[in-house]
Image (cartoon, rainbow, N blue to C red):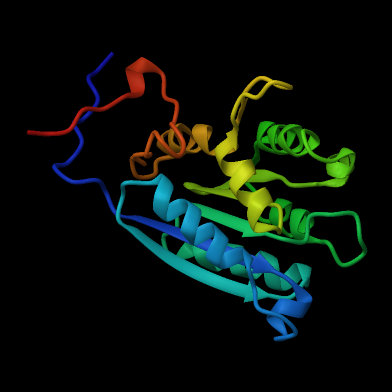
Length: 204
């Protein structure tokens, strides 16, 4: 096995696409909460310099798919969506995401529902998916800021349950595998997991 190339002296810049899907927020009925929640959590969880490309769009499948394609085309290696993943007629984010996929990653959706089931039985109604398009990982997240943080970061152990890992622990290694930049997590927020053979050291 060849040795992994060392990391550069500073963490690599990462371009992340953020898509909030909401008819009412996109039309100005109320302020969007999804984009600020995503930026806040990612800013705490990653040591890499981050550039965000943001979209606030209605629940229209064609518009969602077009936004995802555009974000991948401009160089995003991670795209996170929020909203539009329930069973209601206007909830079409999963369909729009699957329409642009090269590969699907069912484990992300399974783990997101597992986290939400710790709080509400209606978590089984959530239809979040994760896919790969080119060398970009696209993940659907829930719409509420609290649920976004719990889904990404996981749940600590309590008297009533064991700790539940968040999905972001698997994101850095997934992006390694699809040819993206090396994401460096802040362990106090979310410790990314990599096999020992995939861990790279800082260049000196």
